[in-house]
Length: 292
Ligand code: GUN
Image 1 (spheres, rainbow, N blue to C red):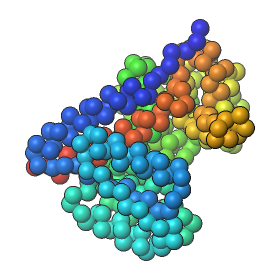
Image 2: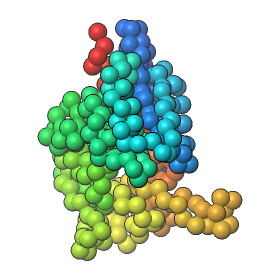
Image 3: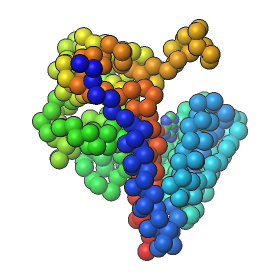
């Protein structure tokens, strides 16, 4: 029997409606949450993401500021922009869109953002807070979105075997940290490109999270029948018959895996829409802290 589809679009809509209600409450108390998104250069995918973030912000009743800087921006100019946003009381959340041009250091820029405005959850202070279970931190939006999806579909996590494929700072590592939080209580295995017998680990998973950035990497033989499969990947695969010359594929071989899994996220329309919804949620939280 084919797996149940986990509808990230519907869950994201519900989160955004919750956020919009929270924003309306804050506005009534005199605070309009403000998110600043900094885009350096004109990377086409980043330009689309940034536009979508701004639109989602405004739909939720927040103020959205997009700062576009040329691809030739120096590290000093970018840091000065971050400093200005840190000091701006109308801005509660700051996101510097990645990737940055080669003359800019993402690590240094991330460390310069005030952790209280780091709604991406990338600052080491927020990474540390997540690890020690400090609720004042911000969790990165994609793994936070996965948790939201699991909650809204009542996927049991207590004592569950979770296998995360991928060890990035943005998804794989924080995903594992969220899954072992008290109340979630999963048992986590993190696999990566050097893992021996990755398929053997994956086959034990009750919840399998694929975040390795390789198209259709997870095949049906790597999935335990009935498992929940969460696909975080979004990869371009050449397809001459398509108008654009490519199609988007996740890290999971969707057509085959859906015949084995119990639940599965599609790509697109799975985890992706939740990333923006969780960004709005983090921005609302950041603004709530400074509200009277
Ligand atoms: N580039 C792609 N995804 C993201 C994200 O979630 N945050 C930032 N800052 N850059 C990105």
